[in-house]
Length: 313
Picture 1 (cartoon, rainbow, N blue to C red):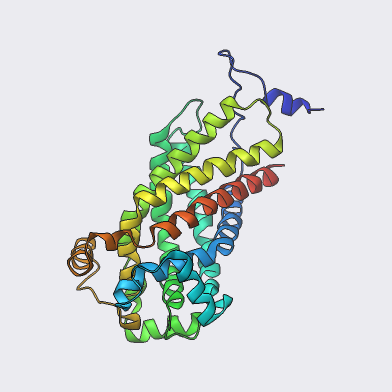
Picture 2: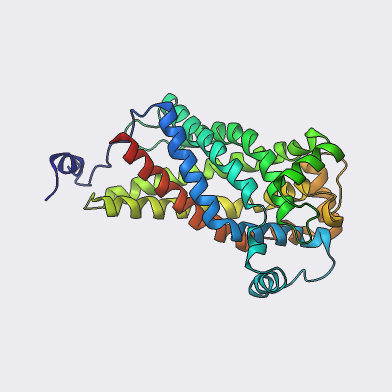
């Protein structure tokens, strides 16, 4: 039997459609940070092997003249055969250190901006959701980018670094602190449209699913967040793959024989990659990137919403 609160949440709108449940507002800023931190950690730890495959594929042309057209399945098998299953997890410690704090910033800033911009009002507000997402990712990327640089360098085949501490120390000694932020501009330029599409799609799909849903049981709420998150992750990751290739190349330049760029300019990096390898190089890693972000977004959003619900009650 539904509780009175659940029954109230399921009351139909005047037009006959089921009303979307009220947003989980009223949490303190630190609780949004806690929920976001847990969601980010769960997402990135669960999907890390796929992220390693994406990084390796995006760096193939930059570090080797062979195996550019290797099939995805064979590529996975070759890594496991030559390095063992743990080869897919090199750099996971760096992501563990970065994902929690960055996602805490990501979701707490998003919730605060969404509230300020009116995104919690009844109705659909894609511009408010998109704008809040852009502000959130700009702040979050400032926290995550240094550890993302370390993570991607450790993910490379024959990486010259022994671990997180060794990588950080050598980057500072050989390239300076600025190397940790060489790709920050590209990351923000990539993640701004990614996050705008991601949040707008997520909120739109979630609202549509709630309107056609007849039951607001907790199991169905989870299914809604999984579906909306997956759709948002797939669309956003597909359209921003070229910029992700540039970001990866900038972060790993000079490592394992990879090309160096004259600066952190997106235009210069794009021009150099296309001139040497052709436009198709900008789509390297598309499949694993979509395969990563589709379930990752589903896991992240469902975990985040579950944590919000837990912290509220």
